[in-house]
Image (cartoon, rainbow, N blue to C red; front, side, top):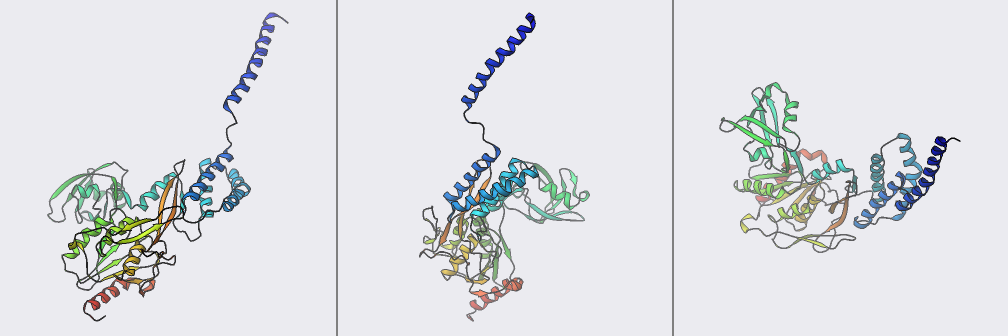
Length: 418
């Protein structure tokens, strides 16, 4: 063997001698090998199970969790491997299935949300929106503003209902079409939009630069009843802006010297209980206990009726309209007014969901929406799971007539004929 080949062989042997111990040392420093994708899934499922076990109102059985793991190993995981889905897809779809297995079958709220859908869901739950807050329609002279959200930046800058938009960012709206106009009025958050318009009242021109931003949607609207001196407030959803909207519109009605009020909660899925608490102060004795919530692992939390100056208190006869879509804070409000004999309730049984709900963030940005407490009347009676039962039943086929029927009832009551 010549010297050059000998040197090469020696270097190779030395490298092998040095490499093996270093590799072993590296392994010893790193500890156990990195967990496999399957092991990461199992750890994530344990996280989901633990959050539900610690916070869910109903019992969460370990046997159901172990049954899910068996289904995951035997069916879900092999099928997904064949489909060559991403790790995120496997984790999110499987976690959603796990929550469905662990929660109660009639629980309509508790659910698993991956990161992006979770962000959208949270905004919907809290009644938040991100846009310019402008809704309208196109005519031969421009784009008429039918409604503008009162907490939007465009409203703050001076745009109002019935204003006529003629240009958006310098472009004539007549050359756009309604679809393109709506795209312009619903830009990404933080976008500035220049709007040229004519005032619907003074017919004078104006310009606003509105910013697309997050706000609480208006959820209270005045609805016609067809009967003089009887008015209706349509509460479509509760959110943090509901008390402000309710007080503002109630002030409008007070100036008309009403003889009765209808509160339409049909299809109202609820929202924050604090919003229902706030508007209860207009109708019930202030300072008293309204309801309380108590959970399996959650201490008793009482809600009292806020204190308002006496001139805000409403003593008119009240009718409340409900249906099976009336849930959460909406049925809490209707149930309390009925229980205290402050209102007569018309319609169908409500959803039976007077439950406190919360959102819990997971390690990957996903969210668990969970029921964690049940509502009770001050005397300890729980709100029934079969819902608030109306004083007068009206089926869905009379939905269009219910406001009129309730208005007639209040009118006759005011005349002393009921």
